[in-house]
Image (cartoon, rainbow, N blue to C red; front, side):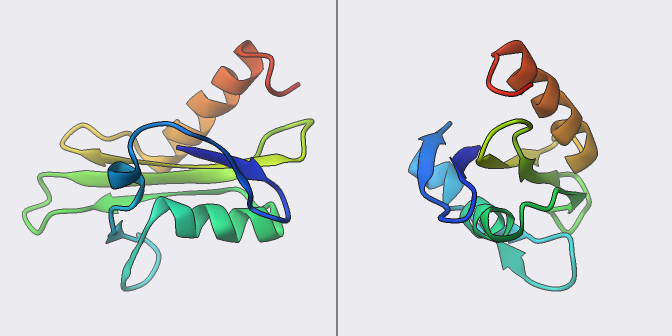
Length: 108
């Protein structure tokens, strides 16, 4: 997960290693792959929430979920990715992150 300033996209916080954040995985929206940094960049520019998911392995044994959006009541945005055989769908990630931001008093 990455948290950045809206507009500039300046990264303020990164959870997990640079290796995890730099993984290219199916974008789940049209053909091609993307990285969590690419999702963050798009969200920092337009502040639009995104939540999507799809399979990440040919045998459909693994999935990837993407979630991003503004952090309520702040000028910050986030982007998150989860991949694996038990990865949450993007909508579920977005819902849980919204609650986590409120509990941490990061958002209103």
